[in-house]
Length: 385
Image (cartoon, rainbow, N blue to C red; front, side, top):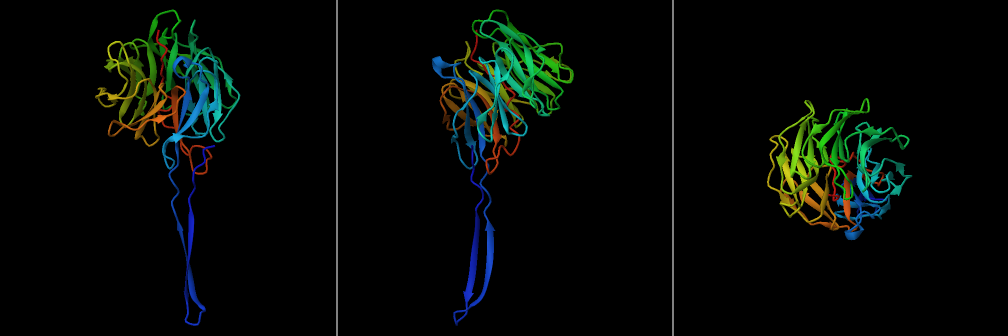
């Protein structure tokens, strides 16, 4: 589906002629031109724009780096309705899309661009994370607009079948898994979807993945939505949508440290280059969208980076140099992390929502390296009640 240009081979034949017209000698030199850099592809869920938010049903591959520059590629791939989040397997060959109102997960073969048979999940799949061993995906079941969910559904990726749900807190949204694969952390957002009744949540539930059992919940701020984990697995970072902060949790002690204040309502986050990059939507006290860097070394927030409106989700390119932010206004916005500047956006339309990034090899046989660590570790929402 996403063919790239391979290397070119040039052969030069050099010959010299004698005075009588006969060939006195010849030599052949072969020069191999290095192949063009592989394409970096963002896989973006389209949830619907404007009044049609929630009615979208597509996954769109977008070239965001490499030889082909930045532009939409291929065609929209039909998945379920309200595709809320996307994760890519370790081999980089299959994307799994969590469909909020279809109550399914759609596997998409990235080599062919074809969607497979939908996998049943719980009610309101909101986020998805794949274990490091690649055997199991875990899907948070947020519930419907009328009722809260309270489970995480494991999916066996060898057979694409759901397993016994694991009970967690009410209204689970974001999920992330430690690098060693031992524990998943789930943000229990509570009733943040319009129409749901019940309190707003303020906990994160760890799940022991060896036993499939939930452990004691950890208190954080109000309406936790997004979850990301530091590369060394020592700290879990959680966005508190209604508290305007990010909570760092020590995985060793299971205790949340002092909340880190940000401007606006934090939705999602990703880790790269020694920082947590937090997407902040507007709040009652701050009317703009931005991305806030938080130092992993000091747990301090730096100056926010203003971006376009409608910001939702964030993923980092495999080389760690650029973050891409989805905006419901139809844009995919790059942030150059070292300079902390915003680049020219790519217009994709259709209500960009979730995002995952992977690298495609020459020859178009699927990504040549695993997706970036940020590609399935954060959660976003516009469903605030």
